[in-house]
Every structure is written in C-alpha cells, then in structure tokens.
Amino acid sequence: MLSALKELPIRDFKNPETHLLSIAAANQLSDGTLANYKSALNRFICWAQDQAWYHDAFGTYDGKLTPRMWAGYNLGRERKGKRRQFSANPYGLKEEEFSPALKRQVDQFHRFVTAPEIPKRKDSPLRQTTFTTYWHAIRLFFGWMHRFQDVPLEELKLEMMADREWLDEFIAWGINDRGNGYGWATLKGAAALNVAKWQHYRRSKQAKYRDIEEIEEIRALLLEIAHKREKEPKRTASKEMLEEKLLTFEQCVEVTKYLRKCCAPQRTRLERTGGKRSVAGHRRPDRAIMQSWQRYLLIAILTYCPIRQRELRELEVGRTLFREEDGYVVRLQPDDHKTGSKTGKDREFALPSNLTADLDEWLNVWRPKIPTEHQRVFIRLAPQKPNDVGKPYEGTKLSEVVSRAMYSATGVLYREPKRTSAHDFRRIAITWQRKYGNRDHDEALAEMMGHSVREADRTYSQLTSRERTEKAKNWWKVAD
Image 1 (spheres, one colour):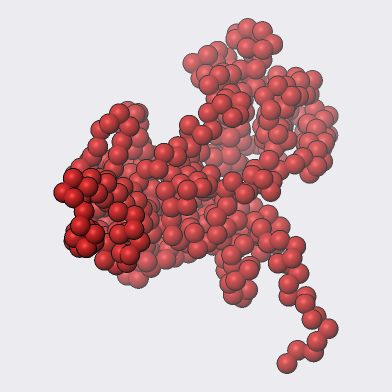
Image 2 (tube, helix red, strand yellow; image 1 turned 180 degrees about the vertical axis):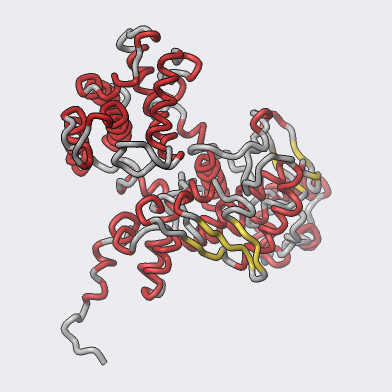
C-alpha cells in the first residue's frame, strides 16, 4: 500500500480506493491481501481526517465541521508539579473572618481613599479598581498575621499594616517563603502607604504628608524595593520564558483563522480517551459552540488590537463598546484604562472591520443564549462551575482562558504549544510593527495600546540587537 500511496498525488486523495484497486489489479493481488490493504487505508483516512490540515488541504472545509480541536496538550496539566502550587493553600484572611471592628476600619479606609472629597486628604481619590488591589493586599497581610504570627482575629487592627516592622517581616516572608518578587512587594507597600495616610492624615500640615514620620518610613521602604526590583531578573520576560510564550504575528493570524473554524456547529470525527468517539457531523452543544466563539474573538481582538486584558475583560455594550455604521468602536473614559488616572484623558479606537460580522453574530445570536443582568461582551461559560455561568470575568480569569486557548491551538497547529498570555500580544504587535510595519504608525499604535512610544520600545519590543542596528548599515552614505 505504501508504494501505491507514493504514486498518489494529494489532490487525488479524495478517492484513494479507486487508485488502490487499479494498483492491485496491475500487481494481481489476492482478495485477502487487498482486504488487508483496504482496512489499513481506511484507518489512515480516518487519521488524516482528524488532522487540522485535512479540510484545508482537500478543500472540503465548508464551515459546518470543526477542524481537529484536540491534540493532547493541556496547559493546566503541563503546569502541574512544575511550580510551587501556593494557590492550593491560600493564606489570605477571608472576609467572614474579619472582626466587626476591623470591618469598620476597612469601610472607613475605603471611604477615605475613594470619596471625591475628604477634608485634609492631600491626594486625589483612588479608582475602585485600585482599591480592590489594596483590599486584596490587606486580606493577605492579615491572613499572614493570623495564620503565621498567631495574632487572634479580634486583635487585628488596620493600622498594623502601616507598622514598618510588621510590614518588613511580611514582605521578607512573601519573598523568601512564598517565592514572590519585588513587584509583589511594591503593591503591598503601596497598600500600606495608603493605610498610613488614612491613619495619620488629620495631623498632617505639609504637602504629601511629608511631616508624618510613619508615612516617610514606608516611602523609604518603597524606594528600597524599587532599587531591588530594577536588579531583579524579569521572570516573565526572560529569554527562556519568552521562547515558551511568543509567536510571530503571522502565526497569531493563523491561530485566529483556526479558532474561527472551531466555531463550526458540527464536530469532525475525533478519537477520545476511554475508547469513545464522536461521529463526524454530530451537532455540538450550544455551550461548546459559545466557548469556541468566545475564545476566537478574544484571540482575534488581541491579535489586531492588543489592549490590556482589563480593558478586554470590561468591554461592555453601550458603555465601552459601540456599534457604528462602519463597525465597532471602543471608547474608554479615564476610569476605564490604566493610564487614565494619570492623564485624565479618554481613549477611542475602532476594532478591525474583519471582526464586525463575527462580533455581530456573537452579540446577536450566541451571547443572548445566556441571560445576564449585565452587558459585558465576554462571560464565564465553564460547565464545571455552573453557578458562575453568565457572570462577568474578574481578575485574571479571562487571561487564563486566553492562555489555555493559545496553548491548545498552537499544540494542534504546530505540535509545539505556546503559553501565550493576553499581555504577550502587546510584545508580539510592537515587535512586528517595529520590524516590518510603517514607523509612521508608532504613535497611533501606542495610543491604541494605552502607553507612550517610549514605553513601547522599552518594554514591549523584542527586537534583537542585530535587528535594532540593521538600519545603521552603510550609515555613512549620503541619502538619495
């Protein structure tokens, strides 16, 4: 059979049995041998039809059948056992563990940092998203105080977090015992700094509370941490880590096209574990199709508009996402994006027109199948957590969906899965645009992504030194 297949052009593989019969007749094969060859050929055809390339290669993909969607690559399983799984042993204090007195203090702190006007407060109010970050830091600090320092719950007071000795011990423990970095320490120190301002603001008479020794001590700690952070190896952006995560822009486009095909309503035949097999043409459940649509749109938007995952997570019809005659437009007010609190400026950009029809179908056909009390574009759909279905994504949950989708898709397409995160698309975009794109677009791309051109070059560009110096070749020649 191998010799017969060698003579068979791939364009004629739609009818391989006819070709096999002619070869068999020419070689006078017995009926038994021919039957064995037919069996082997059928098994080979079944395998080929399960491959991601099959429908494209033979022109049989019609939008009804999915390509191969599983190649044995699972990000959660791959990570298991390869790093310290502290998430399985959380130490943060649960909200129900807060004493009534500590709850009152947290409520007072919340009002102090977020209310529009507080007498004698010398800072602008914080956004709710920033307070949520500090609230998480407070829970971790008091969880450590209670579980590792044996301080009874009823003795916990918010001002303990502004005590420099306690704070130093907590940060040292987090770095030494939990394996956190100085970026983690910066967030915990910033939360403690604001707690100190809440504790002492009434007696301050100088700008920025410079006359309050306790506040100055925490500022000094943050300065120490900043210096150490500059020298700390960037674990998520090391050369080895990026090799495991980054794709080319062209590959991202290919992944996007593949994920679009995965939105098909019928499943191609696929071998499953346990001997079970789904039959070609079998109708997929609506929830499975919705998951495919959502994964595709998340990756597609990040490929062409690599915005921050918070901005993607909080896309909301009628508030930040608007349908216009030419397509969809994103409008972000200062509170909706990271740099808005500093610049006070809005951001507005259009989504690519090639996504308009697909966003229409998602928002008009599939998204309404799950009734919700909100208008977020993307919603939780995990069947293993039915009580969360329809709820908006919070925290890093949406980024986890992106990483899992990219790991699976790249495993199918390239047999080398990549752990591409939502943030990595920013690196991919800047690197491609700096290398191949129009440099007149530098400022516009930076504006869409929500940072400066300088930040794009400093943080996101992954051009090698050779690539950065390429244009210096023949620098001495006079321009035409």
